[in-house]
Image (cartoon, rainbow, N blue to C red; front, side, top):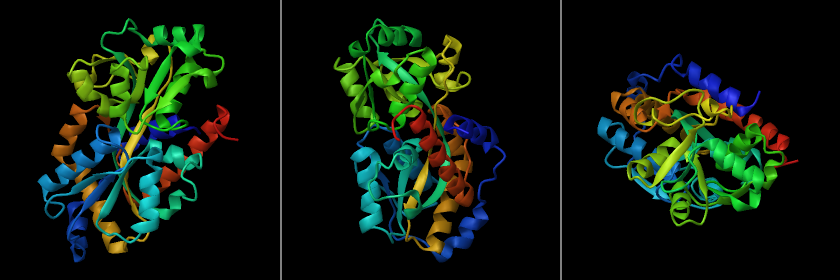
Length: 333
């Protein structure tokens, strides 16, 4: 079973998974962190940064954390710098959570975090799924996904696609899968340029250094609103609701590809059980809140409600599925 079937199944089942109730959070008050911090493993402007800042603010507004949650941007290695920092230096930090996504699972699956594995961390919960997008600059002559793919088929060297994950990462995989479904014979010929975060990738798109951008709906929203980019495809099974309803899916353009990026958090592997229970409950209560539902609707997030062990098992299955997918397209042996 590949990642896309796993993710679609989890999204459809998300509404059936009950959030940890507020009573659990109250019961965990034997532990309360003196200070809280969320690490976004990329520069400002990308999906991990969005996850930390929006969840942190919602937790503050709901009174689920004491005071203000600090957000630290720690870019590098497609999330590997942050992963190693937590594993090696902050393994017992009970006040720390780290933003994660399908990109994190991708890098772990491909052995891209040297010496690190998923079982070094404690996996807390998901806060939704973010569908992938492919976009171009607002003034680009390209208006549809088939047009972009036809250019790649005609001359792969003439088209560069930028993304906020490393080569072989989740953003890279999404555009390769789209190319594969579009009939590109050798997807390894697709030129992908990696940056530390979606914000940097879009900056290069606007500068004319690349012809297209692959990312997620949440990180693209601000650039769409500013009029800087136009989304030529959403990698979802059907059109999204709300602000993203006007963007066509790849499927309706004849390219049947789905790319859903889950968003959630992990914690240091040495975190205490009391702290782990606290954070699982805090994230679940955030997800269940009206405030978070509004943020999801505004930013194109789809439901994905997984906490504690269910989330741990989901990530493990995702890592296994991505390993298989990466082998299929020749990214790993």
